[in-house]
Length: 164
Image (cartoon, rainbow, N blue to C red; front, side, top):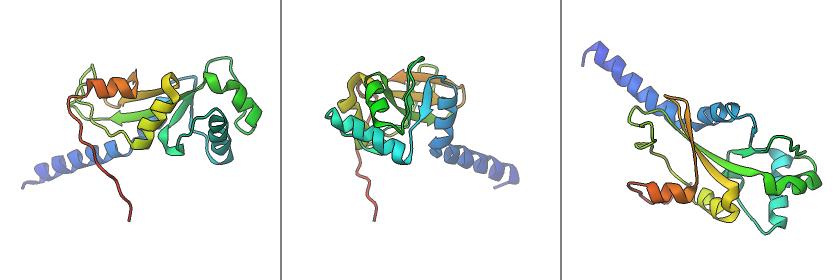
């Protein structure tokens, strides 16, 4: 293998690796939407999930990446009553990003995984759950839902992830 082939091979490997680093895509997507905020952390997240549970909805903390809060709505995530007062207006967003050339304008070729927790959250939250597909190459964002994704999928492979 000549040096140029090695360099090109490494560039392709780095592009694939960068695609696996979804947090960068998440941050870019959140920053490009004025009314989105990153998933709260710590006690703020605990209070948010508690407020949801009081309405009969139980989701995992890993089942969403961001929240969309309408303009003019203010939520203090350190105050359970504030969260409860705005909860029905908050949309929970899962962000998926890709940077491959195969992704087309209509997002065909976009390959990603949905976790069981993400699917369960979509079912529990209904229209208060959306999926943002972010094409890092074009900076395009497609807002969709888990059910729309499953209906549109050309193929799917189910797997079990384990941690030992």
